[in-house]
Every structure is written in C-alpha cells, then in structure tokens.
View 1 (tube, rainbow over the protein chains, first blue to last red):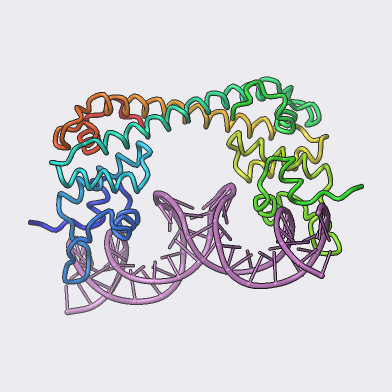
View 2: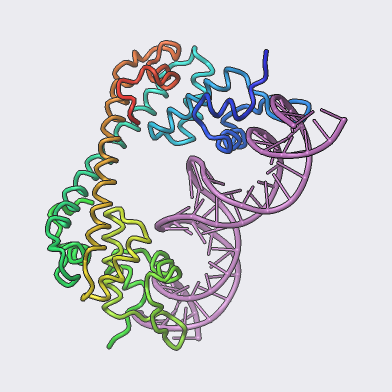
Length: 140
Length: 140
DNA sequence: TCTTGCACCTCTAGTCGCTAGAGGATGTAG
DNA sequence: CTACATCCTCTAGCGACTAGAGGTGCAAGA
C-alpha cells in the first residue's frame, strides 16, 4: 500500500489542497494517518469520498446536506428516504432560482437594449435601477 | 425639512436598519447629519439612493459594481458606457448561471426519478453523487 | 553528500454582504 | 415620570473557502 500525499489526493479528486485540509478540519473527512514526517497519507477510499463531496458541491448541496449524504453512503442498509428528500429539496431550490434568474435576465435585457450609449442622464440602465416601478417583472 | 430617522429610511427604501448602517460604513452612502442626541437624520435623496442600491442588489449586482453605478448616477453628464458594460457583464453572468442551473436541474431530476425509495445501496441519488461519470450533462 | 526547490505542515486572518447580540443612550406617548 | 420603542456603537458570526506567513520534509540532480 503506497502512500497517497495530499497533493495527489487533491489532483485525483479535483478538490484543492487547502480545501482537503478544510474538509478534514470540519470533520467531513476522517483524519488520515500520517507519515513519520507528519505528512498526511490518504487511502484510495478517501479520494472517492473527496470526489463525492466535490460532485455534491458542484450540484450546489450545502456542506451540512453533504454530511448527511455521506453518513447515508457509509451505511448502505439505511433507507434512502433522507437522500431522496435532500435531492428533492435541492431540486425545488434550483427551480426557484432559475425562475428568479429568468425574470432578472428579462430585466437586464430591457435595461441594456434601452441604453442609447449617450450620457448618463438618458441612460435606461441607471434609470431603471433608480425606479423599481419601471420593471416589467417585479418579482425579483 | 423634517428629520427622517434611520427606521423610516429603512422602511421607505426597503433596506434593513443594520444594512443602512453597513452601507454607510463602507462608504456607499454619505454619512448623514446627526440630531442633538447623535441620531442619524436622513434626506429624501438618501432614501432614493438606498432604493437604488436595494434594487441593484436584487438584480444581483455586487457592491463594487453598485459603487460605480452610483458615481455615474451622481454625475449625469458622463458617458453611460460603463453602466452599459456593467449591466451587460451582469447579463452574461446571469445567462451562464441559468444554463448551469438547467444542467443541474436535469441531473437532479434524473437522480430523484431513479430513486426507488428502497435502501441506500440501490439509491441512484447516492450512486450518481459518487460517480460523476454517470452524469448525463457533465457541464456543471 | 549536499543543495536546490517543491510540496508539505500549522496557524491566523481575510473574503462577501450582511446579521445577531451586548450594553447603553435617546425620544416619544400616555 | 415612566414605559417602551427606537436609536447608538462595537464585536463577533455566518458559509465555504482562500491567502499568506513562517517553518519542515523529501526526492532528485551535481
């Protein structure tokens, strides 16, 4: 069993070195064994775990949600209802965020289109910002 | 000219009281005059400025971008090219964020649909998280 | 063997945009 | 005059890292 350094673990999992240490510090990762010179020595399983965390973070899950997902993964005989609930909650969040960003996009497009590229006192960007009443979609 | 308290300014602009003080502390708002008892006394213009900031924040502009937009608003004879550039940059950000969230949404839907509500070792949510290769849309 | 130089170690502090709370002063209505 | 709401300043906390200081370990080339 060869030793995996933190740098290698970081490269293979796609998590940055300081972030790996951070995850260890908050208990998301079990503290790995150390070499004689006090350097961390990871196992292949740690790399999978890091990749799992990274993927979940990319999908926008919060650390606490990931903590729950990880304990579920650690005990595969549990019901996956919690995992399902977490994913569903995240899906609803994402859907709401998309709706809100679409409204925003429409607003920004109106602002940018209306800008005559002249002076500020005729600029629709500034004008719309100053007066929310000019918004076509007030839901943001 | 009657005095406007911070509470009233907050209510009228939709910005919370501590946030008003925070904006003053970072120089987004000029420090207002004070009453004999050291309480802030705002002008109507301050309320407009706060509403401007709030609206821009709702549209997702960063404080530094808002700072630039405000200096533009303060000098209406300037060219509005910067305002236009800021709004356009924000629009591009929003569009990218929407695209990325759509990919995410698809991923989460697959995860949730695939979940048979059984035990964790058959759970697609956990499985997909553990293996990025199973993603249908790798762009997140 | 020595040295170079990168990767590793710990620790603290900073990022952003607020928000919460302590502990006290002021202002207003009854 | 007494409640009581609102105001004041100050510090610390949030989430999820990121940056930097100051020092140690380790492998490869001269």
